[in-house]
Image 1 (spheres, rainbow, N blue to C red):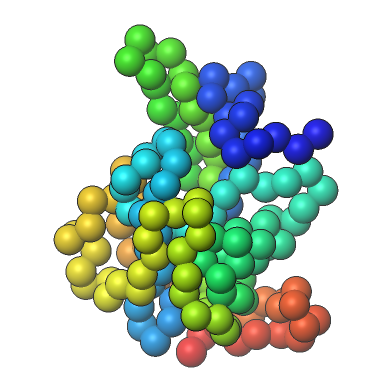
Image 2 (image 1 turned 180 degrees about the vertical axis):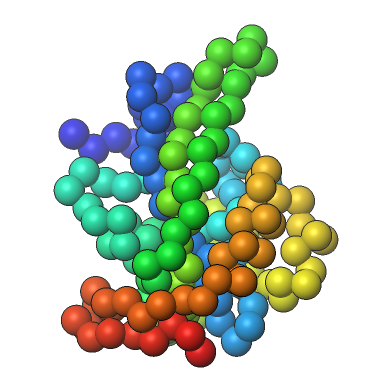
Length: 164
């Protein structure tokens, strides 16, 4: 059963699996301004919840297409991030387990969808100018220092070299 955006994500019975991506284009990284809770109004990585039967890399590709209108090649390198957000009464309102991947822009012009308020390419040296979700800048910096490995491009069946 498919849930509307946010349905079943607040006060969950179990952690929600999600993906995100540090997307690089011409030395800049992609940030999105969150349009939904948790973290509405904060800058973060693009991404979202993995659908039942969907591979993690396919989820990254789908989310980038839906949120930003771009196509990406996804690397194998991932960082696991756990987000637990309590409500005002200290009850667990959100619990996400997020796998953040390195990705390289392939094509498409950046266009923010209704899911995000804004999307932009940002110089990694200017990350501190953005009010981001907790830990996002550190994740970006760590993933940018790791060498990206070639990975299968699910759009074409080919292999993309993400090192350049």
